[in-house]
Length: 446
Image 1 (cartoon, rainbow, N blue to C red):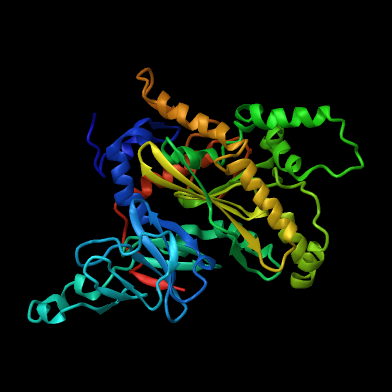
Image 2 (cartoon, rainbow, N blue to C red):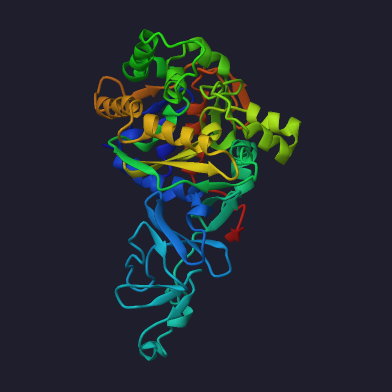
């Protein structure tokens, strides 16, 4: 087995194929944690998860344990979840309120909620030692840079690197559309996320979000069975279709449906399915909602917002959002063959409750540990992880609708069944696995 380095790992990516080691090799995984998840802007959480001063929750960026916390001045800070003394984790609960400071459970060093050191027991024991001049003496370490974009918190671990605006560019239009669907222009997280473990590489889940050639095949056993049962019921035409059927039936749309809906790709690995229409386009109208949107935005703007029904938007490296149903899925890598999936849903502030009910039902039907559809995907991921151990072929093909010399550094809209977005992701993977030029110094942006 080769021992990959930052100089050799990018050889695993070619324009139309990638080597199986990108999914299976422990050295590749370690390099991803050290470089890819350090150089990119990674999703942390939503500011509504920490609404009050002292509120915090814990998560991880790549393999780094971190804390999102609301400071005394109301700003969000993102700190490494370790004491600068002995390295002990400061917070072990998923969420809570720490009051005005964090206190290490080992030696009682304490820190303000922006990470600055507050107090040390028996401080005189450090007099003349030079502690004040060390990084450890300053307090808990903040991550390199933080951005609160319309309530969504992103962080870049690296002290210097690409700016938030340059990294995401026009892809932020998908987040804008999701937030703008609220008459108040604001979202709130609706409860804790659904979580379940996948015994596969994290990139398999990210790729699958824009793989439009699998739904009518992999989901035939679940969505296909549900559709058949519903058709056999002889449902009256004048009776509204059940919400569950509106959600699950589009998964059985034919290839032509997915071809025609289109895929848009942006630089740095971002992209979305559903340029022209999507599986979310034909949901039933919620009484009173359009009128609220017209009052908030005007009729023309309201139609523009609600007429945009993008399917899955991937924000590289590891999240996907669905604007029309206010969902975010976070794919947290835990090893080369282990990924924790979190599925968050959000409430549209000042919108009818029926919208949140539909979003919650979608999450349960499609993405929950007890879901109908999600387990089809899980089965495919784990079969692929096992199949990549076979020595017959070492390369994984991502060649569908490939054109030699395609430019992945510019936005493009193509046939909805292209694998361009997968190639786009690996193009970005190779870019951010390499040392990055200095373009922005560390900062906290609110």
